[in-house]
Image 1 (cartoon, rainbow, N blue to C red):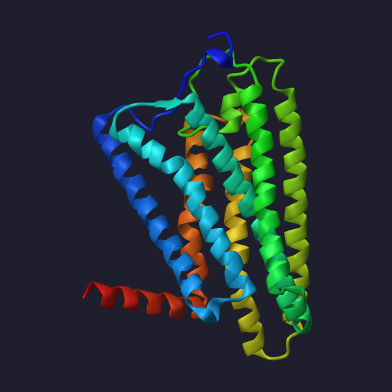
Image 2: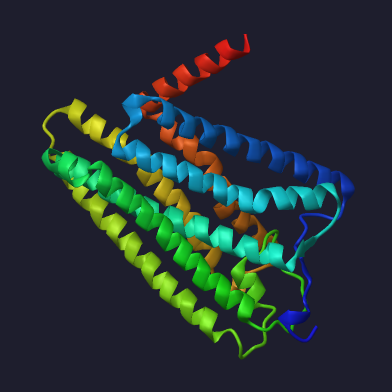
Length: 311
């Protein structure tokens, strides 16, 4: 296969060739996908319907749940369909769409997590100025900036990836179209643009990470100065879920993309891809609802209302 213009499809990496295990993989991914849909769907509905949750923190949480749904919906359904129908194929346009949507949702989510760290910083360190700094117009603007940065990030990566000539076949060693695996199919001297873009993206991601870390250093200093134990517990209950989500997001992505090449293998790459693309969108709703009394009350109210509607 001489170049990418002759490609009509890619072959994705299958989890197994045994039919029984393919059906098991389909069942496991179906359960995970339904759990992610249920958890994030409940949070979106609860925040949208409960006026008590119409605050900046929950507005950003609603956006995060939407991006989580986009992340897991980009990769898991296609993998489930391939296992169910015993195929590995994905069309060229479908692969390009996966690249764009996956990078868009991950880039937007990371930007949004950075914005949420700023929101927590203002709430804890300068609470008297919170209403002025985090007004509705400011919140909408920051959320729009997070979505726009994800879109721009995805557009640049997708345009570079699809323009690179491919000369190493059409087999992608991953269960979805992941940019580093597609780059392995390119000609040795033709993917420098994408590598430069990846380096620039890494620097931007590092900048966001440093901003989040510095924000939480200031937050913890401020929390330790709160005289009452009840006040400290309330501040921690606001910040710990977000910090946990950030840690899960960054750690899984870090191990997937920054691991030494010497320990890279198809099985390990597959496992790490599941960790950073499937696990966080599924666990994020649980993490946010565990220590958040307001959110738990809203979810209970929503579940009771749904039960009444079915009776």
